[in-house]
Length: 133
Image (tube, rainbow, N blue to C red; front, top):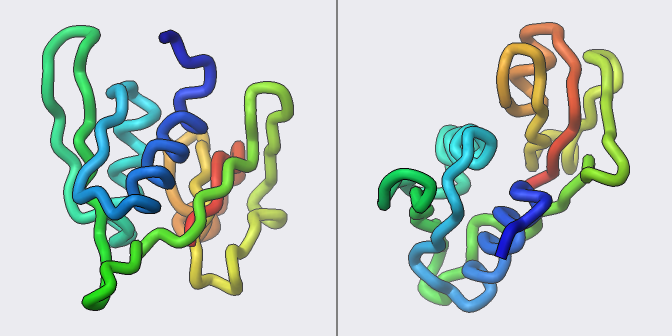
């Protein structure tokens, strides 16, 4: 099945895997999903990203993180902001703060995909892809 919105698909797969406490989840590998996975790993939301398969069948295997003996998922909420039907752009002055800086917003900028914090430091704005906390 072809998916129109790869980012929403990725967030849904992570959300579902976390809800049933799966150790890993597979996501179709695209340039966009690779970059978002890299940001999630840098920010400590996921443990590891591994690429498996070959050609167009490549997939990213994300190792999810849990805390405590009840294995509570580190990622509590994933929210898609900009979507194909309604793009959301913010300039550097309007970049959102997620939960007063506890969460992150992933922004697609002219200098690549980064967190709201990095975008603020670099003084660039862009498309607000999603919020994560």
